[in-house]
Amino acid sequence: MKVLVKQKTGRAMQCKQTTDRKTGKKKERAGCSAIREGCPPIKPDTRIEDFEPFVKWLNGYGISVISIDLHHDEGHPDPEIDDLKQNHHAHIIVDWLNHETGKTVKIDQKVCKEMQTVLAESLGMERGTPKEDTGIEGLSAVEYKEKMVTAHVRQLKQEQQELENRKSELLKEQATKETEIAELEVRRIEKQKALDAESGSALKSGFANIFGKGKYAEIERENVRLRSEIETANTERDKALIRVEEIEKLVAQIPRLAEERALMVIEKKEILHEKEVQKLRKQHTDTVSSLQSRYDKLAKEYRSLESSSNSRIERLEREKNDLLERLKAMLDMLHEKLKEAVKAFMEFSKSVLRELSIRHRDTIVEYLADSPDVRNAAHTLKVFARPFLENRQFDKGSKELDRLTSDFPSVLEEVNRTQNRGIRL
Image 1 (cartoon, rainbow, N blue to C red):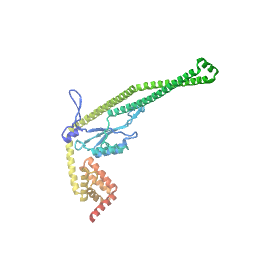
Image 2: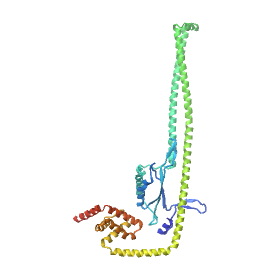
Image 3: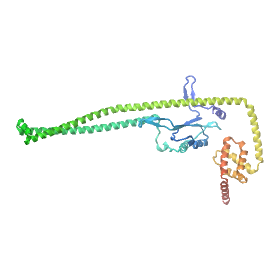
Image 4: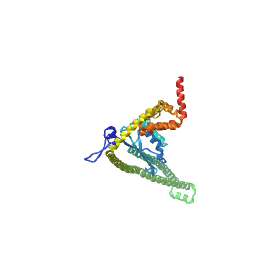
């Protein structure tokens, strides 16, 4: 690519990364991005063949794909489900250089949006909504991790609030039980005073209890029942206090657990991110080394061929010019319709048009219509035009000519109908 840019533009390629000879450090600067890489998400069942429509679309803009790698075995641990969350994606490396001009291909924002749409349709995936329509900016990897940690801390705070609410409810129940116990104690004291006042003496009350009869026996039974209720209330109060203490211990541990969990998640994310960065750096270094090796090899071969084949190149150039002069002379000798058809074919092949214009189509159809064998006539047209066209131009014209001859009767009918309509007007 460096040699091609030098030949086409007369200037050396401006690389984006340079190395300081004194310190050995690499620096980034504005320059030429001849080789670019994209990393789109894919589905678990995506195959290389699914990218074919996208590759053809890129070729239409002069961008050629160097390689496509599918990664179905990568991901990161998800703490919510305690399992590996798959990250299916692809690495697409493309040649962004126009080999005719020696300059990189220029595309605007509209074409970039169309590129994303074509890729989504090729892979059978849903096209994302542009941020111009939603007004939402995308998150970086660090921002996304911070967002997930914040959501987890928010969940822990919500659980803490629920535990505190439960604690408040239990404290209210405890206060209610203590009030009931106090009321029962007052009632017991009042009963006891009434019993002492009516019995006159403990002995009399004892005799009444022994025989189980009379007013004093009934009062004693009431006292036993009240003591039983008090003991039950005290037991429930003690249980409530124990539960409150347990909840207080859990609530006290929530900030520490939340901090430990957040630190653990952040540490794991940082380790995974560092591993991913190291892996990408190694891949980048290996790719640069491989490309540099290929470049050195090609440059060596080019210098060898250039030094040993100057005379051969001059001879071939003379033969090529002589052959073109002969072909031009032969073309001048052809009948007028074939000559005009060859010129129309060459004009279209060298133009920026993607389809034949009406003038080009009518001229070629007029020649083919006079031939008994349309395909043979089309082949003759290609033969006379081939020496004057480059490979890419000839392929473009041949594809359009083959499309025209594949359904020639309907094309001829359309041409005649258009011409007849023009006569009536």
